[in-house]
Length: 178
Image (cartoon, rainbow, N blue to C red):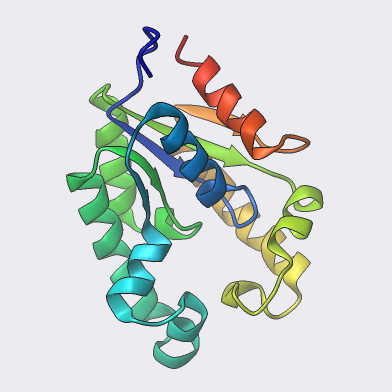
């Protein structure tokens, strides 16, 4: 962006499934001329399996182990827009790194917030979301009850994605830099 807006060195997107982290992240990176890293995609590339397969075949513990390593590497070595998987913030080390990043002033941690009414059609609660296989709506709500305080405490800004298209979310993010 060459019109005088200050784009942070890192824009880190956190939030639940269905908030639009990957979609918004890609659009935001394109709009700002930044790199884009989606840590879920990096995990799949590193392991050679879809996330759902990792959960089923290797277990959540193995997934979280790999996720933590990939996320910490991305946070330490990437500039631009970084979309984290919804559960990445559960790691104490990731939380510490996010706090350090935002305190340095060169990174912004954005909590893309969404309610279940808007997340449900986006997520579809399909087999690609292993933590949502049993009672998807109840599981999603339980995840949010646990994670919302974490997302909120880590965020420099909370962006409501309800009733907004991905382009409108990107515009809201950029407007905060003006």
